Length: 159
Picture 1 (cartoon, rainbow, N blue to C red):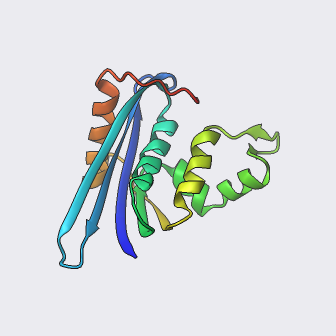
Picture 2: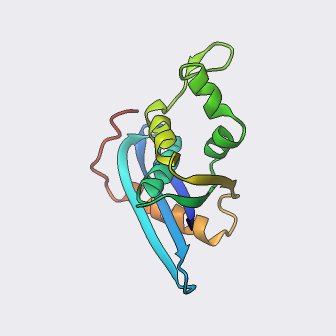
Picture 3: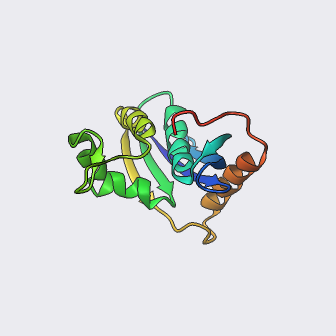
């Protein structure tokens, strides 16, 4: 299986309910050692930062055409901890409820899509400190903020 590094970030102006965007950079080295890079981004109205963080990961994984070993690098502890600390499994087991009060899990629509998207892959989630000079994270932030600031027309309907 190919090994793909995915770097993502999300942004929202006036969080919550402002215009937002996501950015993703996919990197892969082929058998000859040639590096291939693909960038993805888009903007939405009426969204949140967490939704855009999730969208970046989701869109990047969905862009893959075959099962891969994936390393997802994100500055979103929300995403990393959901996978690495068992939050996601607990949410699913509790019918998308969380905490002692059994509050509804936010962004369930995107989490459900992400659960399906990762199934054919081997995925590792890696937290990176945001705005700390990490080259790919900075590029994803640039893509996300450009998308948020580019007068997006799409409305984040499911929020």
